[in-house]
Image (cartoon, rainbow, N blue to C red; front, side, top):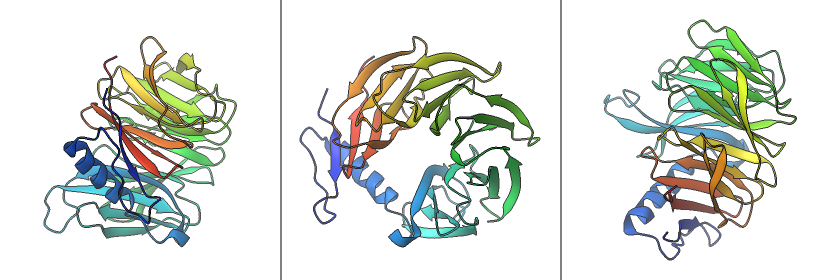
Length: 294
C-alpha cells in the first residue's frame, strides 16, 4: 500500500506533502484541511464539528458542502466550505453544544450538552426547535442513525441513550461501558451502534433489541473516535494510543492497524465511497489512507 498522504502544520502553517502522495490525494488533503480551519477565533475554543452536503442553505439554493462547528463561546455556526464564510450562527448557551451532528437530511443540528439534554436546532430557522432529556450527565458524543429515525448519545458516565426522532421519546438506555463515551456511530443500515470509550473498549450494540453483541479490545488507551464504512461491514477507530484501526463488524476482529501518527488521534473518518480514511492527531498532521484490501 502507498505511504499515507499527510499534511503538517508545524512549519508556520505551510503544507508538507509526504512521499507516496498522489496528486489526487494531495488535492483532497488540502481541501480537507482548509475545511477544518473554518472556525471562530481560538479564544472561542472550538469543541466539535460535522460536515454535510445539503441544499438551499446558500441564497442561490444550489448544492453546497457545509460544515458546522460548536464552541465554548456558546454558539453553533454553519459554514460554507467552498467560500469559508459563516452562513448561520445560533445561540446555544454556555457549554450547551459540546458535540454536534447534522441530521441525515441536513434539516437539523443535534447538540449534546453538559446539562443532560440533547438540543435540536433548525438549520434554516437558526432556532432551537426541541430538547430531549437524557436524565444523565455531560453528553460527550451524539449521532443520528442514517435512516433519520434515531438519535444516540454517549455520556460521561458511560451510559448510552437512544431516542425516537419522530416522538422525542427515549426508547433505549444501554449500559456496558465503565467510563466516558467519546464517540459513537450507527451502521449504514441503522441496525448496529458502535461505541468507543475511555475504558479502552469498543462495543457493538444491536439497536432493535437493545443488547450488546460484541466487545472489542485492542487499543491501549482511550477510544477517541469510531466511524462505520459505507460498505456496512467495516468500521474504523482512533485512540490516544496513537493508532488507527480497521475492524470487521461481523467477525469483531481488527483487520489492519496504522501506526503513522506520533500523538493521540482525535478522529478518523471514511470518505463517502469508503475507499479512504482521514485521521487527525495532536501531532498536527492530517493523514489520508487508501483502505487496504481486507
